[in-house]
Image (cartoon, rainbow, N blue to C red; front, side, top):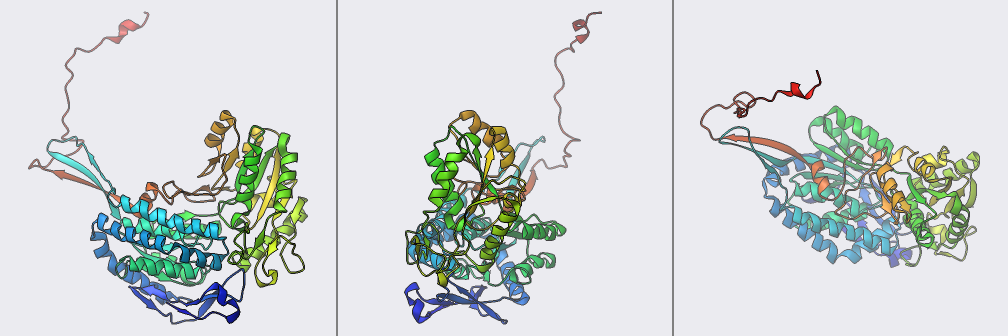
Length: 538
């Protein structure tokens, strides 16, 4: 990996990256072709050129990880944690550089980019301490002079496949706990964020990760490096797959890993609900709904999809929400830090967003805002930058939506939200649970009974009360139910279960063979038996 000159008209953004794979401690060129990653806010800005890894490059990375596993897994966990601690310090030191690249590469605002990078710092610091807390248990035995123990053991080589919308935070959620547990890693980074992945990898190597412990391969997903990595499960080269992405791809990965009797970690899509009831602070709810729906241009798996309003407050809240949506500042976040959101991350997301506008019209939803793509002709004074240079869209707000509509049932990566009216709390909960997904959820209410019912009845892995559907902390479990995941979790101590296995050990010091359940001592009854027949009437 090295830095090269950018296009002269995009030099203000920074230099470009001549990218490579990182295998066995070295930057390695791939034998096949390559691809370019450009700034979605200004297509003249070349983030870099990166290799399209073939099957053999991915296999080479897995073999390097397999070779490194023996020594790394035998390294004491607190020593492994020192590498993670140094990594966290390096990310903190270079937070500004990483944040600026992240803004260029995927279009997040500087504020959001800084939060993305800070999540990796927090994760590193949390798991550095967990290196001294990979606890097992001492269990009492039913035999004399015998002891029982449990230990956490690493799984082996972990294949990581990450999405581009959180290009620093999400890889840290996967790679850091896997390393703490003693695993080695092959990481297929998102082709939307290969630049951030390259800097992430450079800092991890600088922190002291030994050669082969973490390997980075670039390329595509289907019929590319991502698919090749999953298929190595059947060659015995990969012991665990961790994936963040679509539900459809997650189902395929689950089936492939299931054939090998492996349990993948699957963090998948969402159609996240937010309920607002009459008892809520409606100003607070309005701010939470706007941020949840339109932050990152709606390109989060936890973005608000269905805004469910009690009928008593629906009319006024809808009016205010649509009015505020029309005042959103949009534009190039590298040059205009005051925008709420920037471009779509890629052409695919933009096309999916534009297609959903037609669904809404066909289904009879009422468009309060649906201007489509922002162009020089279709822009207004609140847009900042050159509309023709990037992938920009106006927010979409739909009212008159029912929970059965395709709009309400389908995850759409983009700044769009459906307003659904509910007669009462029971109906609001039915709507909130009425999609195939169950990732994140939120409610705004000041009624303690509604708070209790919501957190008890909601079918979601994560729930917020008087907060938005988005926002994760490094020490809380992240993941969903139903079509949003397979029950595994990222973050916090809970993720350690995903990257370790339990070993049960019994040690017999008796000098002879003791058979559990057979030679077990018993305590004889010392009191005479009780005649219970006196309790009954003859």
